[in-house]
Every structure is written in C-alpha cells, then in structure tokens.
Image 1: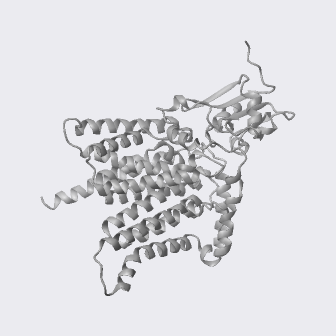
Image 2 (image 1 turned 180 degrees about the vertical axis):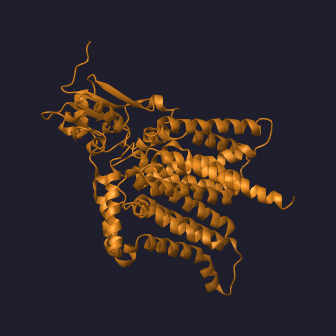
Length: 507
C-alpha cells in the first residue's frame, strides 16, 4: 500500500497536467484563420526569408526586420512550407503555451505549487494575453520570455544554483530577440546583480588574504549572466556572432523609423488607460488580495522583495514604452504578464491566510467564479479575442482606438451575402486582411471616394490617429452618417459599413 500511493499520486498528477495542457492549447488552436492581423502576412514573409537564408547557410544575413522577431521566425520555420494559414501558426501558438507552463514551473519552484498553479490560470486565461498567443507575431513571446527570465533570476537568488542564472541570461536574450524592448531585461538584471554583489561585499566579514579570489567570487554571478546572455544571442541569432556590426546597425534602424517618429503621437496617459481597459478581473482580485496580505503583514520579507522586483520591471517597461511616439496597447503586454504573476502570488497568499474573516473555502469559490468568468469572456469573444476590453471598465471606453484585424471577416461575410457580391467594390481599412475574406474587389479605405466604390468599411482602429492622419479625414467624412450595418464585438461598436454615397441621418 505504501508503494501504490505515490504511484497513484503521480498518475493523477500526470493526468491533471495533460488535461490542463489540453485546456490551454485546444481552444487556442481553433479557428486560427478567422482573424488576420495586418502584421501576420509580413511576419510570414519574414519567416520565409529567414528560412531561405538558413537553408543556404547565409548565417550572416538572418535579420529580416529591425524588431527583430527571431524567436517567431524560428518557430514559424517549422511549418512555413505549408500553404494552410492555420498550420503555419501552429508552432507559434504551441510555443506560447509551453512558455506559460515554463513560467508556472519556475514560479512554482520559487513560491510553491499553489502559486505555480495560479500562474497557469493567470497567464493562461488572461484574455488579452490569450488573444496575442494566437497571433503570428512577437508580443506574447516577448512577454512570456521576460517573466520566465525574471523568475529564473529570482530562483537563482533564492537557491544559489547557477543553472538558473544561466537560463535567465538565455531567456533574456530570447526576449530581446523576440522584440527589441525586451533587451531592457539585460541592464535591469545587471543592476540587480551589481546591487547583490555590493550587498554581499558589505555583509560578509572582511578578509585580509585572498582578496582577489573573493572579488572573483563576488563578481562571478555577473560574469555568468553576461556570458549566458551573449551566448544566448549568438545561439538564437548566429548573425550576431558572425557580423555583429551589421546586426546592430540593422536593429538600430527601428529607432529611426516611424515606430519612434510617427506623426500622430498619443499623450503620455495613453498607457495608463491601457492598464485600466485591458487588465483582467483576476488581476484585480489578486492585487487586492496581495494588498490585504501586506496590510496584515502576512507576507515574508523575501516574497515582498521579489514581488517588488517584478513590479519595478513592469514600471520600467511601461516607462520605456511611453517614451516612443508610436503607441499600441499590445506594446506593454509584458506589463500585463508581470501583473499576472504578481496577482497569482496574491491569490496564493489569500488561500493560505487563516482566520474567520477570510475562510479558505469562500475565497476559493470566489476565485473559481472569477476564473470561470474570464474563460466565459474568452469563449464569448472567440475567435475575435483581440477585441477584449475589461468588462468592469468597458462603459468608459468610449471611442478609443482598438482593433488589429479582428472582425473584418464578419464585415466580409455581411457583404458576401449581397446579390452579385463578386461584382462589388469595397474600400476598407486593412484592405489585404479584409480582401482575404471578401469575394469582390477591395481597395484601401483612403480610396473611398474613387469611382465605382460601392461600400466603405470603417474600423475602430482608425480612431485616435491625430488631426493630420488620413484616417481621421475618412472617419470625419462617414462616422456621423448612418451606416447600413454596424458590427459589434465584445459590447463595442467595432466596424461600420456604409453604402456610397453616405446616407444622411434623418431628423
């Protein structure tokens, strides 16, 4: 009987893990062709070029774009030869799911199995992150590599095992090579390691002999991290090892592009609103639970320090992205991922609390309801999950800019149902993505007033583009007219379809 119990426990654990993997992966793999973001075609083309360079052993020229999206291209290379859109996206989606489990393992090792479990729930069913794990792009990979790297760093500091520090360096390199803002991890970690070195030097007894050996011992973590970081860059992007100046020059192009010098700049408060409108209910619950635990002084000092490091990273990343002229809600996705981890720790702390005021069963029931609510939100939006807005703050969303291709297939479906749809000419925002679903002719939205255009499709992503943007001119021309049809997603008016010439609203 004593031998059966551990075996039975392992079997149950294995089955539970398999079911959780299926729960995370299966819905993400459904209807991957139902939504196309404007960046996905470009990144598939980049992956094709990346794969050709690999096949021809042109390892000096692997950089296709300054972003640089190398991890996306490595994953995408596995299925780039397939013509099917859904098949091409499979490795990227599965890679994101595996990173969620990696984060769960790391933080479970750091803070216990309960936190590890809630890390899976927080990351896996964060509606915003969920949506981006289904996109053939870099934002989700950047976010997940970043939190895994930070978790490994904290795990090294707690357990003093160098393998974790080496892995932190490699995953930080992967984050930066997913998208350039991820490189902030390197200086952030180096500063933390320097602080650790200084604290260790002051905290240890002074020795008059073997001072060189002691200095080497104190600096070895910093050296190990730096070596692992640069080794990770060279392994993931061999071009850096073969032609470093060329790679650095290519990556620097991003800072001279419209990404940082766009005309229609948004205000400094844009990302504050992003946090308000795209956070998840479970994040709010976890942060409130964490605040209650701090107020009751129930958190160990080490845990508070570790959570403070995660919060500091989130704040610095948010500040970094606020400096760029071009802003987009997905650009601060790593901030949301860090908040997911922090909220998972808060949830775990609430379940371990004791006392009549916080019965464990009641807390677990409330948390289960919130998780089920988020799953219901994801299911309701599927497959247009990029339309997510926090239901608690949605009433104040107004006419804020939103959208990255989701819903265009619905507009095409509406127009495809028209008689002689194949002869219709439609001016649409994101014309390539709309045209992938529409049977007639598609032209860009700025050609709305050219001869022969039958319908104009306006998209919520055209809003808040600034007074000098052509999108604003088109919106002002049509938005206050009466649309023939309005498509709503997630409780918001998302697309407006106008018959040309626009029909005035009757008094």
